Length: 101
Image: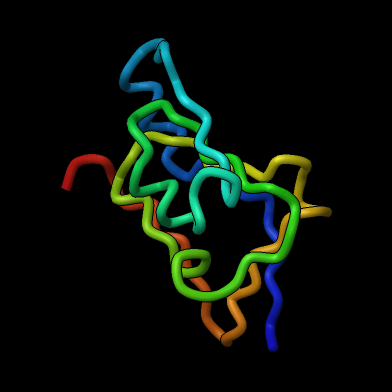
């Protein structure tokens, strides 16, 4: 079993600069409001923050997440020491995708 400990951070953050200053950003909390990281990403709008609570996240919706080119931030609530995405397989991916395809 391969474990990957990461600071979940914005891969699309640079794209946020294209919007100038973003106001009214919402914070979407995993798992308090959304069951999985992917569910929160899917619901996020440009400029939003997906905040992942302390814990170990596994399985569908928590690994191989796709940002779909959204200019959002995904971060752990209290840092990488307390938040782990465990891919439970030999491969793991986060797909930020360019905003414009």
